[in-house]
Image: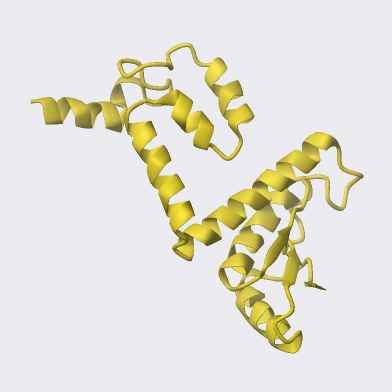
Length: 167
């Protein structure tokens, strides 16, 4: 397995992946992010996820997570969790863009659940079910078809579309 660089500008990720895989003669290649900007201190997990999504799309075999504490201090357990989830989002985005059937189905399933206000299925399919639950607990108006989440309220596009189709 070959470790790739951790800092690569967005416009150079494709070239980097292609060259690394050619030089390494097809050995499994993993990247540390890569971080697409260097001044995202405290948000390196996001900068790494952006780079990771492109790297995975262009052929990286594995993504190494980056924590928000990167370059600042040793990470906490929460930092590691945030970094791993950001990396999972990057990998899922690349899998979706590469038209992987499993990722397409998962996205379709959560969209259908969202349109039905099926909170349990959405939570089950969410990339971080615990965070989903934590946010949902803070919203008293969520929970059934008649009460969309508090974000849009009566202006919920799904609720409006259902009203229009019932007319």
